[in-house]
Image (cartoon, rainbow, N blue to C red):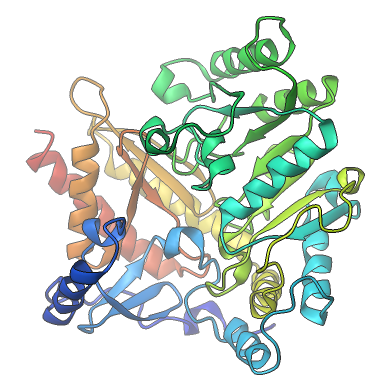
Length: 457
């Protein structure tokens, strides 16, 4: 077994909160407000200044300890400051940090390890191109890869999707408000419906059939609206869209359509990959292999910035330099990624995520019994979404904001998602202990009960 057991990683098994935000946090928040960009977002919802993290816990500059059910938007899959990961990263920083795409032992070993955990037909038959520091860079690479191999330029993506904030990634993202100030983006992008049975008020099979019918029409019909298609881009489970888990048959249906039309099928696994859902990749829940998939977030191991695109070797038609980027050789991040995967394997964290995530979802469903405002609890592994509606069945973002505020005040950090902000999103580190899961979920359950009286009554 590599590294310490998960129970040794944290500050505590439960939160310890006095005043939030405390005076030291308020001071730093004020200083930030005077000099930082107006684009800063997260402190607007959770006003805190952090000092230190360990495992699934965070300590702010006032000494308050929080259970972290957010993990930096899924970055810290093996926890904050995991000693096994940090040890390797520290050693590498003293040796070499930047190597563009010259070979290094960490680079080769990480590529080999990614092949070891690659899904289905990609295992043993893939290539990896590393990108810049964000998932958007990996998405950009996948778009270029699809266009390069097909000669097409039309991109098919899905409503309710999020793929990133750079031009290409934003083009296939569906959020109109997010995109509007930066238009025009890439031309010839069409968004098909993503099956969302709860929001559509349809049976799962009907939702899948409707979505696949639209995809096939867009790709194949003369008036489908997409000229010269280059690829299909989809999140196997939507993240920012609200932890939307597609029913069986959707991804396999996309695979069929892509094969019949000689199009690459690209899965965005940036938020849901690397063990988050209890499998290495979310697509493995559906036994569907993409032609290419993007990864980032947890890939750097301990928050080191790194992204990558893993694709079938048949698509490796690029010439030398046809895809480039300065930070595709961030060696400490590659060490971090390698050690992160080794830690997950050594501590059976895929099974752990499955079991603990199942407990959290079951407990949230129990908390919502008799509460019509909790519409649905869903997810896979430690990727959990709880959707809230008001008395008319409409999205209730105000209640989710109130739940987030209650949890923050009681020492549990949670986040929101969904196009209406009405989905409570939980993505804690995979090293979250059973006790921490119980304690944190009880706080969330209390928040659900408290907000049912104060907001939705």
